[in-house]
Amino acid sequence: MDLSGAAATAKAAMAAIPSGAASAAPIADPAPRWTLDPCVTHLNHGSFGAVPVAVQEEQERLRRLMEANPVRWFASLPQRIAAARIEVAALLRVDPAHLAFVLNDSAGASTVFQSLMASGPVDVLVTDHGYGAVTMGAERLAQRSGGRAITLEVPLDAGAEAVVELVTAAIAQHRPRLLVIDQITSATARAFPVDEICSVARTLGVLTLVDGAHAPGVVEDPVCRDADYWIGNLHKFACAPRGAAVIVARGDGQELHPVIDSWGAPLPFPERFDHIGTLDTTAWIAAPFAWRHIEETVGWGSARKQTTELLDEGTEIVAAALRAVMDDPVPDVGQPIGPMRLLRLPGNLGSTHADADGLRVPFGDQVQIACAFSHFKGRGYLRLSAHLYNSIRDYQHLATVGIPLLNRWSAGRENSAGL
Image 1 (tube, rainbow, N blue to C red):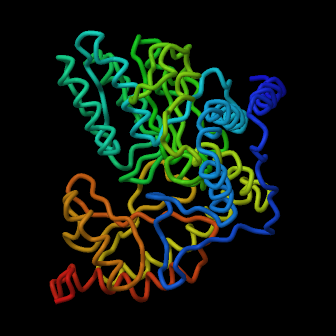
Image 2: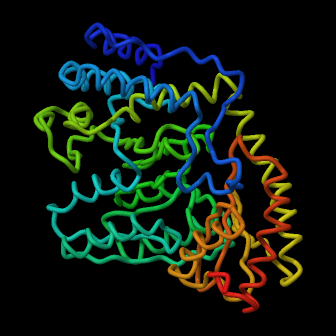
């Protein structure tokens, strides 16, 4: 896209905002600062992210403007959102005419599912690596429309070529209307070759929805332009306030409408998404500030390199502790990705969704370590995800304090309640 044109459009959108709306505060911090509890070892950035102090302050500045004069704020809110949307589109290297803000990745998926609900039976193809909330939405679309929901099993260690072959064969066999595919999987911490998959799907006449929840900030150029729809969270690795995500439509997007109707309903896409009523959308408006804050204080290339190298070393430290009870703690995930890693849990820990999810709070309460636990094909996993606030000491602490607790739980010497 012509980024100079996008910048000019953004400038025009900002000019339409009434006076009294000060521009974003300058970025002055020499490095990102955080308000994370120093008594907790935070090893799960991928679930809920973390917001740097400067970004929190920028969002609070916007909220003060909102509360100082709510009438003026909400009267000018669509223009503010449009300006932020255009800037985010430039940062993501896409045409702003194809991008809209949504509250989160699942809301973006729901927007796509809603657009297909009245178009007759919709057969949907998903994989067994899919994020639960999005997969459930796809299954509900199939059920309500009178279609079928088909789940493709993809081996954890399948390489890119094998994944493309599996998906292509499944499309040829089932002829779905819609394929939902993860760019970076949540439960299994791996990448899928979405560009190649979407290209094949288009030649076979299948719509594609790429779930790129973890991609912004992790992938240098995160938007999959071969997808009919791409959704991505800005409040995970990109460090925007929570409630900031985008949907990118390959076409003109006129079939897409917000899941909550507002006064922008008669407008074309994406402008209708700029009208969101009285919701607090300061996360959207602060999102480009968050992106620039990381770029200007560390640099996104450096951030990706730093977190990847840190997890390479940290994973080996944690794996060494797990080798006390197993031979192969680090599974082959086919396409590992940057600041996310997967390790096997000892014994039968986390072998179901409920069991894995149920480990987070008691584990954190007992050892003050925040981790993600997942399951795949009846096996429990520990998922690590890193950001700029992490250091090698965090993984040493997990190895010396956290892993022995998991080993004891697995052996039945105590339960997760510590009894």
